Picture (tube, rainbow, N blue to C red):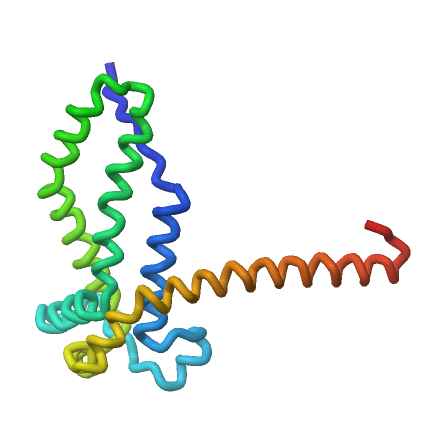
Length: 188
């Protein structure tokens, strides 16, 4: 008999929000904007096979110093919460479930190290080592540390503004579609 393992769905809003925050923080940290707009000034990406250990190491420092890594910290408790939700109909196992989740924390930290290493490799593949050293030096500076400290506040404000903007654009487009369709003889 084949062993089947129920795969948990981590598509909840909170996981997606954390992932979006990671991407937003990365965009803010590295200037944001479209790839087209940045093409002219962006350094040539390094080929994956040419990455040196020192290149990856400095990229990992940037991942940590820039605040990207703290987003992954926030994801780990979310996974535990998702597991608890999956077994909510089994209150008799809640104490053991919590103990098991606590026991798994060191293994989860190893999993976090995996994504940090992947983030470092991805970053190193996009920016050459010299540029990453400059970015790292910025994040080590007082200004860089203040920038990182304000990122969560900026992202909170940005997400609030984004929610307002989404509502405004949604209303705008519905209104404009109705107007244009009315001109064509359709009433909605």
